[in-house]
Length: 295
Ligand code: NAI
Image (cartoon, rainbow, N blue to C red):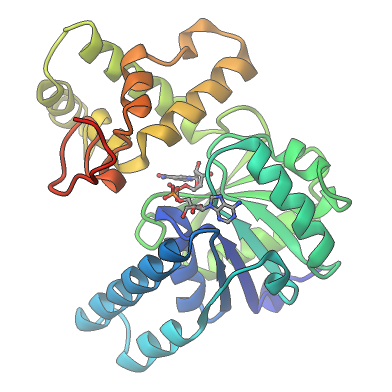
């Protein structure tokens, strides 16, 4: 099993909002990065946004020009899980769907080297269940980054029922090597942050749905009244309404309490393809709106 200092090659699966940020962080941290996505356009979009983001940091003097270009060169896009065979650590950041993630963990277990650590960036899905899809449950762990990963300081590490102390220590040191602070959660629905955040976001949708106030006033209330940097509805748009809905469903089914039942308005937005900022429209509109999205 690789120790933190031996983690030299990192596989990242999913090149969306989170995967692209995680790839950028790992590359800037000196790792060779293998970035995989089922959608080739997601990969090309990710390379463009990672390069632009690193060059912005260089322009601001937060990274040398050489370090910026070296980091970009360290990222290689790949098209098959087999291409991750040399990775010391794989971080999965695909869609929040247990069946999709489990299938990937089964494949990863077959193709990666026996010492590789397999991590998931899931917002809520049980690490223990993902680990049980593999023959190496002691080397499976949750590594929950926050959006956007290069900016947000926290990584929430989730220990599955069988995650070993060595793997936990290696992932904690690796996270610190990336400049992050770490908190540790046991493997229960929503872990720490989403267990507390998602009911608040859901309540904001209920307030909007039942006509308590406008979206602007709900967000301004929480920003100015509780000193949050952004309101819960805007934050939901940034996270992705599909991700919020998936997490609430995991909380609802995993904890069996109707207080986690997703607000019908959130469900309707997701059904309509209003997924938030990444789709140009969610609770708010963001300029571009793909034609596949209904008004
Ligand atoms: P996203 O929708 O932006 O990106 C997901 C990517 O995964 C897409 O590019 C898609 O093509 C790819 N993908 C789907 N199935 C695949 C497969 N079988 N193999 C390879 N690629 C596949 O989603 P986002 O927001 O990046 O979320 C990804 C994960 O990160 C989810 O588990 C989510 O819960 C978690 N997360 C999301 C946060 C957020 O604020 N959006 C924060 C922390 C965790």
